[in-house]
Length: 316
Ligand SMILES: [Zn+2]
Image 1 (tube, helix red, strand yellow):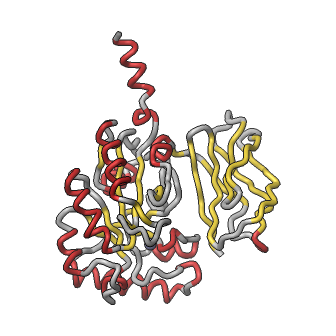
Image 2 (cartoon, rainbow, N blue to C red):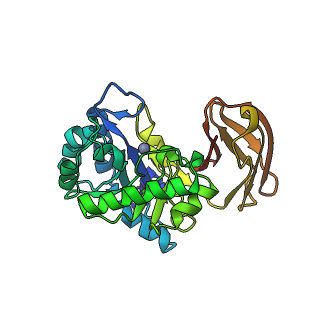
Image 3 (tube, rainbow, N blue to C red):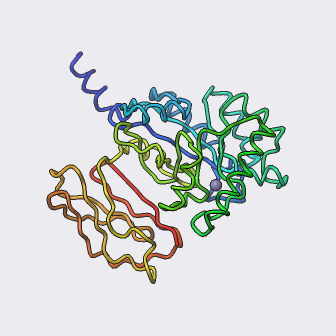
């Protein structure tokens, strides 16, 4: 009996995966299906977390584990919301309060400052911060990849000083607009000494091998497969060699990746608009003549070994 119980425990998904961070945008706003989460779906997800013993922790707890190079407990989940849409305040927040779940709201400051009608006001933010953390998601939600160093700095400075002035908050955490970043952008942002920076790549947080300046978050919008996301683990020791910049003529020619774990014999490679393709791994090395056409100006390349996953983003 005891053996069966232990086996069941070992097989239950929350014990088999790493920590997870999710990102929401709008709540019960059917005008925008690709960035919306219905309240019905949100409650379903929260009930699932509750029933399966997941622990919803403040985002900073996961950050602290990564910084200490410690394993993130398998049942930890952190919830984030991007942009600062009004529907978080009107529709989402009551549910977070009902379940007592902590959250981190990343705001694009300009939308609030200029009183855009779909976004939360400073007054609402001052109320929201009693229940969760409010952090920084740029001033004008611009494409940093296409902006000069000076323009990026000016955008950061303006947003940060308004957050200090209106909310008395000095942000510790940052999210790139559109999940867009490259080495140059990363360098500028890192000068602001945030404790962690988040992307919007599907993944999981192992802790010991995670990078606090490039933390994966899975978006729970539209028809996102929530339960599948919870099963993913972080694939540690991945280095992407090719492509490292947005592909010319939108053709991804060769995908070259090395894996630290030399015992891996096969993997799946993801290319936006092309899904997953199984490839062979020789002595930790993947060299695949993909020749795949992509359609978007922001694409993701990923590698998956069983349920372990790592994605990266390339922008035009
Ligand atoms: Zn955003």
